[in-house]
Amino acid sequence: MSKILVVDDDPAILELVKINIELMGHEVLATLDGIKGFALAKQELPDLIILDVMMPEVDGFTVAQRIRQNEDTKDIPILMLTALGMLQDKVQGFNSGVDDYLVKPFELEELKVRVKALLRRSSSTPESLKKPEILTVGDITLLPENLSVKIKEKEIKLTPIEFEILNCLVQNHGQTVASGTLLQEVWGYSEDDDVETIRVHIRHLRSKLEKAVPDKKYVETIYGGGYKLIAEGMNKPAKK
Image (cartoon, rainbow, N blue to C red; front, side, top):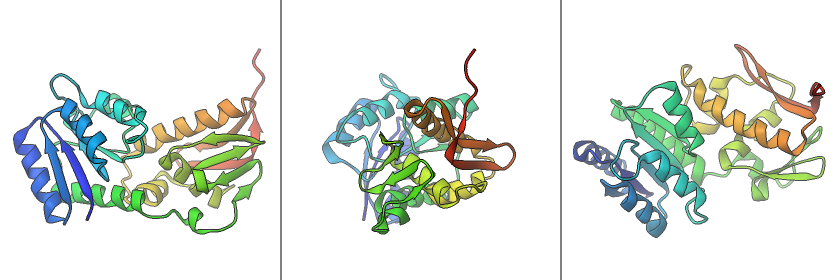
């Protein structure tokens, strides 16, 4: 049984989510307030947080940022549950540190799938962690014991999602990995129209890699296809 925190200022939605999560066999902590939600996250350290955006005093984007900035709560998965469904809203959510994004109105079965996927990913051991050897390909060495990657002797700390995305690309290095495949491997579900989830996290991962090695590009976007790892790195054009 997992402990799940639900933060939503709509009492009807809060109760609906609470009841259905409890029917899944989980313990549920619930609050209508973003400030109290952050306090509960620090106090209870839940296994998952389901977070609304439009709340009085403190909005969900701000709460997510505070959760990610706090040492005790920074690795707790966050599912953002909101009526804000525009592309820029999703981008803002992912940039705030959320792991998944579900737009209201939603189907209860879809909510349950998202919850199961996030709990499975956070509680299970990635395949790379089950292997005793360190995974190395080209310039890249995965360090699964601390969710980092080493590129040319420079160690880069990754988030759990970034590590799993990179691990999936490493296992298929030189091949194009479709967005749907990444969604299935990392999040546990596949939606062809949810490519923005991948795009934002790929952008964050690519930024970290290129900050460490500015003259190389390691993750290539294959338009209409997905993403490919260039393990030896592609030389970036010199700036004029």
